[in-house]
Every structure is written in structure tokens, then in C-alpha cells.
Image 1 (spheres, one colour):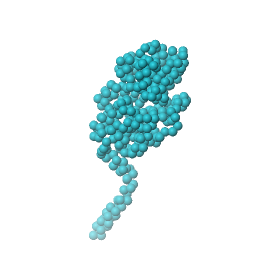
Image 2 (cartoon, rainbow, N blue to C red):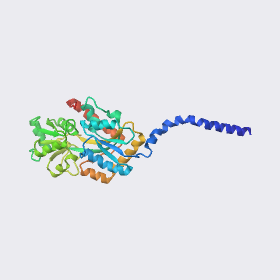
Image 3 (tube, rainbow, N blue to C red):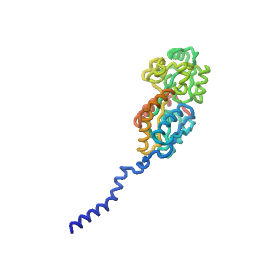
Image 4 (cartoon, rainbow, N blue to C red):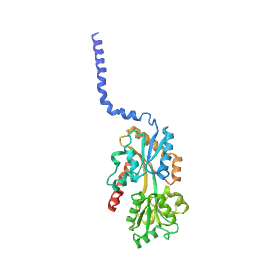
Length: 338
């Protein structure tokens, strides 16, 4: 009987001590984060787009959002917040609750260029965001009006060398990927153009079609119909390879001998920095499945977009490479949006 009482006493002591061990286990399990991910999403997800409705960024978000809605069982509602070189949308996304119910289309302007173009930003790319996954690249072309005398990129460069700074080349705006790609291209090719910034791609394209400006750096989604029909004549693409549907258009590397030259506009999905790991992992997984969907990929190619895959690690590697390339150039040229 004494031994039975001793065993009973030991068992009760063990049970009484168990709650004291719980706090040691809790940080490893992270119950708050696990709870946040359980059943996610249980309500609509807001997708902030820092551009107006109808453009390439908006179209991409709506295409991917429709597929994600089917996969996750909740609507992805597009919230267009254009203005201030994406700063309006970026600030709204940075200040959103970090619960996975706000995602943001962040491009290389938001995450790379703006840190050098502005003295002060209403957000900090490193402090305020974490990458979910890459989404797409927008190929960039150096194109000319149909009746422009230069028939090849080499002829255009010869003209630029003969009369530095006299050939007007339009872009959608100062500090845009198009503008910065032009500046980098001109520097590496050893020429100087006269950059003509517009307030958006549409008015610049209209003037290119009318011959008001002879040349422009265009992105594929905004000019795909003009490029394919020949109403705008592409001299070179700034990608590493020729476009599959425009195989006669050489790369800048081929046409100008610029070894290693590449420039794109690109976009990825980000969320507020403190969003739980499990929620980010779910979004990363479903975004990857969406981008692997052949129907989605086919539609992206139709509108001039290149699917760009990769999760948080690949996202960060791209950011590191882009910052090393573009930030010194912006600062050396003294380009500013302040």
C-alpha cells in the first residue's frame, strides 16, 4: 500500500508540473501565427495595384487574382491606388494589417528605383515588405515610328553618334523602367539621346504613332498590338533572347554588341513584413500553382507578359542583383523625382 501511495503521489506531482513546461514549448509552436494561418483565407483578400485600371499591371493582377480566387475559395479584390511613382499604393500596402488579407503588386520601381529617385519615401522596402513570389516580366523594346529613316539599331546608333543629343526618345516618365533602360543602353552603347518623358505610356505611344517623336522605349503589354502589326517598328528588344512571336527582332546584345545587357520591367507579390510565415507560405504555394497553369501562361503571353516564377528566396536574389545594377546608375546620372 505504501508503494501504491508513492506511485500515486509521483504521478500527481508530474501532472501538476506539466503546465510549467508549456511556455518553453509555446514559442516553437507559435500559436498566434498558426491560428492566423488556420483556414486562411476566410474572407476576401485585397490586392493593391499602384497603377490605374486597364494597364498591364492591373490586367496581370486581375488575371492572377481570378485564378487565386478559384484556388483559395475567396475573392481577390483589386484596389487601384495610382500616383507618385507607385508611392501611393506602396504606402497603403505598407500600413495594412499584416494578416495576409492585403497583397501588393510591387515592381522594380517600388522596390529598387524609388529608393534612389526620392530623398524620402513613405515606406521602406526592406522594413515594410516581404516577398511572396515573382509574377511577371514586361519586355522592353527600343522602337521607332514606321517612317523613321533608321532601319536597324546600328543605323540609329550611327545617327546618334553623329549628332549627340539630337534624337528624341520618349518614355512613360522620368525614373520609369523604360527611362532607366534607355539611359543604361545609351551609356553602354556610347551614345547620347534626348530623353522626352511623358505622363504615362499612352500619350507617348500616340505621339510615336503620329511621328511627333521618332523613337521610344516601349513595354510589350502597352504596345503589343502596334509591334505585332508593324505600326510601331521595333529595332531591338532589351531581353536576353528574341521574343518568340517576334523572332526577327534582335536583342540589344546582338544588334549593338552589348554583352550581358538586359533590362525589364518586372513585378512580384509582396505583403506587409509581419505577415505570419504560414500565411506567406500558403500564398507562395498558390501563386506558384497559378503561374504554372497553362491557361494563365497562355493569356500572359497573349498580352505580352513573360511569366516569372520564384518564391521569397528568388525574389530576394533578384532584388539584390537589381539594386547592384540600377542604384549606382541613378545616382551617377543625378536622376531625381523630388
